[in-house]
Length: 280
Picture 1 (cartoon, rainbow, N blue to C red):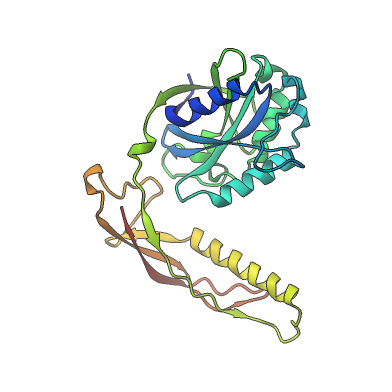
Picture 2: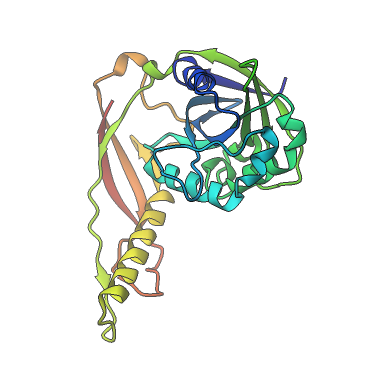
């Protein structure tokens, strides 16, 4: 059957029912979830609005599924990127959904592959690999079809880095797992030093340098190594069991030396250590 997808019954099914009641004919958006070895957890969906529409009012792409071509892959990617920035840690944009007629997977497979390819570089699944096990890149981007007449769900996966790959079958099962998720609250203090060249005078130039410095700091943190009790942690490490809710967790974070940022010059890659404390 292909990759196993576990869908959150309380959110995704209710969303599609609302689309049916609203008599939507065709709509597209992004899927939010988490990736585990051999399976994915589908948590929620976010509708992609039209490029010139009110962000609070998702717009159907046409009067039939064939009008799906009105969705610009570049705008779809930009919307997915904006959604990604607002997600909490551990939740990712793992694919896309399309609400429409039953033949949309066949008639619009080319465009759906383009939309899936647009998520390349946005979804963590297209960037990370887990050594010694099935990688998130191999998991592919999820494509979910919600039938606008029968309410039937069909899922496929496609390689995120290729728009020429075929849509592979995937198995969808419904569960209620969101309420059982463990939430970690973490505080991380960042002290960012920026060296401004003498010739910089305008606020626009200063703002550009500050933005580049913040982006560099984010990349530094994303490439960090995490350890607990002097043992390096992998992306699949379980931090706590179900009976550890409310317990304090201390992690050691190793990253590049936080030397002052200077325009166009990255500090030498020396590892420095800081501590991150969280509560489950």
